[in-house]
Image 1: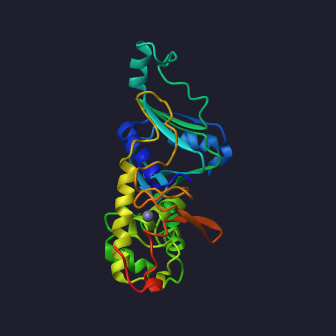
Image 2: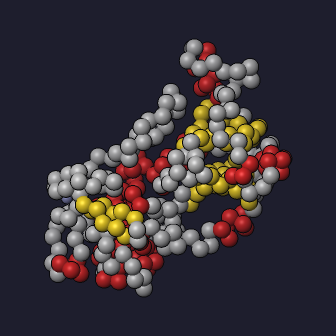
Length: 295
Ligand SMILES: [Zn+2]
């Protein structure tokens, strides 16, 4: 599953290219991804202006000028990209890309594509994807049970801590519970626990407000660093960058046996709810078990 940093990068890229644009055409390879039929979706979308693009957790939401929303919930392997057709034409003139007669890129390879006045967005590589054309109220209802987005401006350290109160689970299970906080997957949860210096297995009911404070700010740090890292897509060349999840010094997820980026100790793995959780046995502690904390 793409995680928040990747979706936030897509949101920023789309925001630059398609906000304010009108939808001119659609390309849909799999109608089963839609919550409606292609005919209704095409009639509903063509001519609509995209007012802005929101992200909630890992959902990407296009706000349309008729009050409706187009929600993308993309699955494993998905890549969303946007390209300016003005740029494509310029590159075509320089001999890099041959635009067709309509001066648009060929989107036939894409699983889903929207062409706007001067840009195209498309999805490819997805094993699963939900594209939902909804009213504002339906989106609200869909997100009713979902916790706040970790980067929401309304989320403070205090409100964050309150969301975990009375939970009796592990830190990692709590962080990846979308009803508590939206959109944190396995990788982010491991990286956040590592940045906090707490084991992913610590019991949430044993943590004090000072710990939640640390988890909150570590979460923001990890998210900002991972969002700002070089993107997975390069709009200049349309070349895919290898998806390594490599973020110097802060990523330990999936690195069992490799040296900890902070201390060099071999990264270990444990299972939490049948899913692997990576941790450094030296840098991360359970404050309830240790009795004393190390810095
Ligand atoms: Zn370490």
